[in-house]
Structures are given as structure tokens and as C-alpha cells.
Length: 248
Image (cartoon, rainbow, N blue to C red; front, side, top):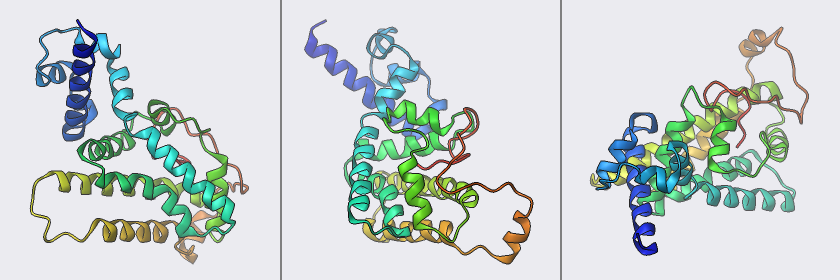
């Protein structure tokens, strides 16, 4: 097999897996389905190019995950340099790197749908998801923990620990839904623009995380152990990726 044919075969398999994972969910797609859909008769082709199912998933995710992390690092670095931290600016640093993928082609939109699927997988922790994506950041990232707590000083850290992962899950699901709409072929005349959609999503995230603590919630929280600012418990290695202090 020549090098040119090998590279082409690998890309066909990768793109086919990406499409099927996005359309049907990662757990619902078998290696055989990918091989057949890619037009490959060689039953060992996937193992030859990717080593394992996990190796294939890693290659699919890292087509875009490393770029997302780099873009977020740029936004966070700008925040730290500027010295002015607001709830909106921190939320934008999380949402924008994903939202920009909506206009970067079908492969990028497939990534959004796949990540949303994995993010809500009850058998996958956020640490495990970050490992698959090749993240080079500590988990949780103390820099991001500090920025979130500075941005929402009126919200107790322990409550932020609950609110942030829920908001992140909503963001990923919303962007995945938008990506699917774009790729559906349906007429877009009735849609609001991507810019308006993402701006509204950021507003909703800020509202979900920063909504004032009500007397009813304060009463319900009595007796719950408190947590000091600047610390974050380690996410368990089991449970869904949005359980625990997911700040990445």
C-alpha cells in the first residue's frame, strides 16, 4: 500500500466515523458500520490506522479540540492582561471557541455534536473527556476557577461548582442543536443569525450562573459543607462529564 493511498484511506475512515458519531451518537456506532460506510472491505483497516476504537475517537476529537483549547487560552490570557474580569467576559472565553466552529464547516459542526454527546455521557467523567481531547491543562484549571469566582463574587464557590457544569452542558447541547440545524438543509430564512444565537446563549449562561441567591435557596443550602474560594474538589472518575466542578 503506497503512502498516498494510506493517507487517503485514513482520512476517509476518519471523516466517516466523525459523521456517524455526530449523527447517531458515539456509543451507537460500531466499527463495522464505520468500515462499511467508508467502503472498506479490509476488516483490519480501522485497527491498522487507529489501533483501537478509543484511538479512532481520539483522532476524531483532536481534529478540533486542540484548536478550541488554544483559542480559549488566548481569550483567558487577554483577560488576565487586561485585568478587568466580568461575568460576561469569562463566559465568552468558554463559549466563543466552540461557537466559532459553527461557521468553520461541517467537520467542525460534527465535532460540536460529538462533544455534546460525550459531555452528557453518564459513564464518562470530564477528566476522561479532556484526556481524549488531548487537553494540556490541569483539571480543574486553577486559573479558570479563579476567574469564574472573581467574575461571580456574589455566588458562593460551592454553588458555582453546581451551576457552572449545568450551564456548560446547556451551551454544548444548544450549539450541537444549532450545528445539526445548519447541516439539515432546511431553509434558514426563519433563523436568527449565528451572532444573535450565540449572544443570546452567552446571556443565558450569565443569567444561569449569576442569578442572585434567593432566600429559599439559602434556606435549602443550610447544613451543606462550604468551600473556600480558589479551591475546587477533584472530579470523580465516574459519572457524567457535567458532574462536579467542570470548568473547562
